[in-house]
Image 1 (cartoon, rainbow, N blue to C red):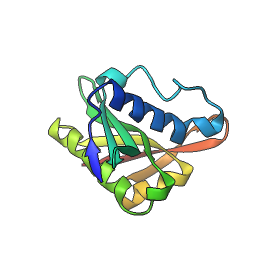
Image 2: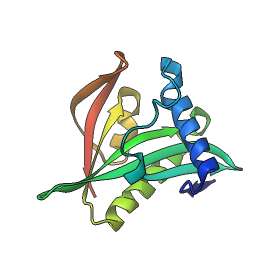
Image 3: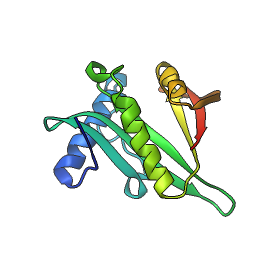
Image 4: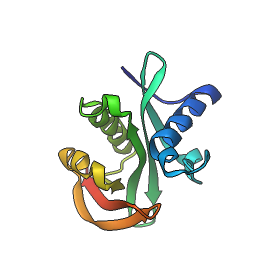
Length: 145
């Protein structure tokens, strides 16, 4: 198992395709809905086993005059690899990127089914945030690193 930064067109294609399949496809969302306008300024990681993507995550920074924080988005681990520590390893690597960039606060919007994972990784559950696709409740969570 290896954590990689997607480096070329082929790797980014595999990365985004995995993101779409894991986070959007089952809701009938089209290919392309797994991307947003912050892709170019974000840090992307993928968990790879034998050239197959089995997990992904992204972090981007929000820097304003008085604050400097980061947001993690699009975290997903293939069901076959969940509950084996791989998600925590990937999350830790995203947090290291934040620390390397002098970020000390990270927030995210976790799907209801992922809240316990983030709590296990020392994130604080703040409040309900948005309802994705009319049915997927998200929770605003944060962590000081």
